Structure formats: structure tokens, C-alpha cells
Length: 215
Image (cartoon, rainbow, N blue to C red; front, side):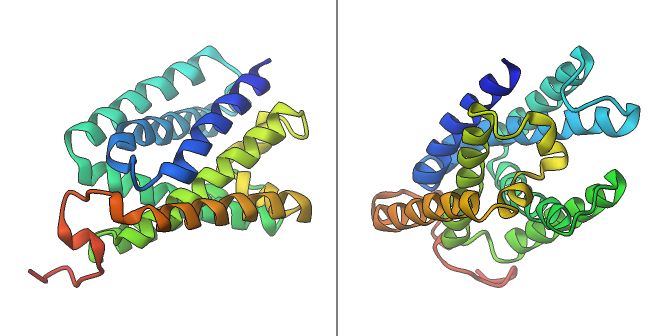
């Protein structure tokens, strides 16, 4: 039942992120912050105490607490939320890469995921998070969540398979699920590009990449 509920939640949220990522980006920042914080808290408990992912009440509680902190930060400071969002993409790519190479050592996966998160966060700061990066990032993460949600709902995998945020790596292992992911991500990017003109951004500089010191 836990797998079904988590899968359903991932599917619903993933569809919103995939197709409405840019339009709802700033509204979604607290939600995105909560999800990233929840996952970080739950993974931290698993890494420290060796329990299975989300298998204990304490793991859930810690995830909820960290998620709430991240959500509040994202709500009060939109730029913090934006960096959290882009960093989560880098972490997903990093952990997915390790899964693709059959690396299952927790601390190695954690370090690579952290490097990916830091790298993407630096890019976001330096280039003021251009609008196209937001579109690609939201479509990528949304499609990953949708595909993973479908896999959980139909019991193709269980939630333990997504330990350390390795959803994308697991999807890559099957050409069929990778094709499903690619189609969803592609449709999301296309839809967001077509509706980009109707989106109001908080700052004009978000529409283009500029050096950090540019005015």
C-alpha cells in the first residue's frame, strides 16, 4: 500500500511539474523544497542508522521536519527555492549515473549526488537560472517522477529500488521505461516552450544567461 500511495503522489506531482513547471515554478517552490527536504531527511536517517528507506516512523518524521524547513525557506526566499530545485536535478543525475554503473555503495552514491547538486546550484547562481534551464529541469524531474510513479503503482519495482534518488538510473536500465520517460519529458518541454510567452517572470534577467556581475 505504501508503494501504491507513494507512486500515486509521484504521478500526480510529476505531471504538474512536467507540463506546468515554468508557469507554476515560483508557486511550486515551497512544494519542491518540501519534497527535496523530505527526501534528504529520510535518506540521512537511512544512511546513519542503516534502516531501509522510509521503513520506520522516525525516518518519516525526520523527512517531514526537514521538508518543512526547506519549504519555509523556499517560501520566504524564492532564490533559495530555485537553487534547491536545480540542485535536486543535479543530485538525481548523479545518483542515476551511479545506478547505471551498478554502484551500490551508499557513501559513494551520496558523494556523487552531492557533487551533482553543487554543480547545478553553481550554474544556477552564475547564470541567474535562465528560463530554458528551468523548463528542461522541470520536464526532466517531472517525467522521472511520473515514470517512477507508474512503476510503483503497477508494482514493477518497490520504493526501496529508489534508494538515494536513483529513479532515473533504474529507468535507464530498461529501454521501454526510458522511452516512456523520454516521451513524457519531450512533451513537457514542447508544451512549456509553446506557453512560455504567457509566463510572467519575477525578473527580466531570468529570460537570458548573464555573467554574475552583469547589470
